[in-house]
Amino acid sequence: MPQLNYSNRPYFDHGALEHISEVLGNLNISKPLICTDPGLLDIGMVDLIRNNISNQYTPVIFDQTPANPTEEAVEIALAKYKSEGCDGVVGFGGGSSIDLGKAVALMANHEGSVVDYSVNEGGLMKITETVPMIAIPTTSGTGSEVSAGSVIVMRDGRKLILASSHLVPNAAICDPDLTVGLPPVLTAGAGMDALTHCVEAVLSPAIDPPAEAVGLDGIERVIRGNNLIKAVEDGSNKEARWNMMMASTEGALAFSKGLGAVHSMSHALGADKHLKLHHGTLNGVILPTILRFNHGHVGDKYSRIARAMGIAESTDLPDFIEGLNQTIGLPKNLSEMGVTEDMIPGLAEHSMTDPSNATTPRLPSQDEWEKLFAEAMN
Image (tube, rainbow, N blue to C red; front, side):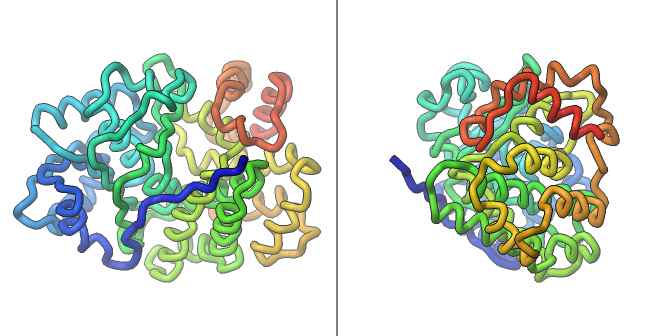
């Protein structure tokens, strides 16, 4: 039976960060652990959030979130949370910082190890209410601020999903001003993450018309409004930044009905701690391959996606996405990102066990996974 899913109520607009003290107070958080990354510290963004928090609150900073958050990093941040006597978590940054923050909020009042709560290890039924959590995105891509998931690279090398309605942040502050000036390469990768979320959600066979409608609206904002290209070409375009952040949030709301094989492949590649590949960029590069693979297995959805994009229904969507990737400066293929043929068997094996497969419209066999990775390399 179809079940409709809803989310928290984000503060969303230019200048929304000004509400952070109000949000902390509403959640009775007096000493938040702010999970962020070294890059935001270096450019003064951490000072910005500090300056918006009133003196009645005492923020503690953890600024070592890796590009792909790891189980080890969660444990280090958790130790700081406990030693400093924190009573809530703020994820401030891209999806990595927010996902790490979710895992810290989970482990602050749950026993065992992070891996125990992954979907692969039956964690869905083990997760109960976490400590209070606020998400503040500084990129427009993951939509983690409204999603029920967190993706963590475990000690054993697997990149696994934690998923539960309890992992939806208690509050979100979506301030497009925080993305103004984001470098073109990060804007492009994050934007393709948002677009891929919307596309895979629409293609998911799960029945959830409201979520599908949200996904189509996100696609329209990215492509028909030309907002991704505008944001890449002019990082100070506040209207484009607003629409891309909305598309990012909509992507996560939409994928309450599931994702697909693009994410299975990108999770496998993102687990490689040496390559340190950007998740959104991977999604953009892989998307054309999976669109070709799914062709003929999704009814009229390609036509509906094309209409949302404002292009002819006869348009070859994989070719269109490849052209978009080229326009915004993404790599042409996985080979350009350092992926080699000898990695394919291991990547295929990882992909076969990814939870995103539960809602992919066409499930590849092991041989097909290997062929898909080979195709995405060329």
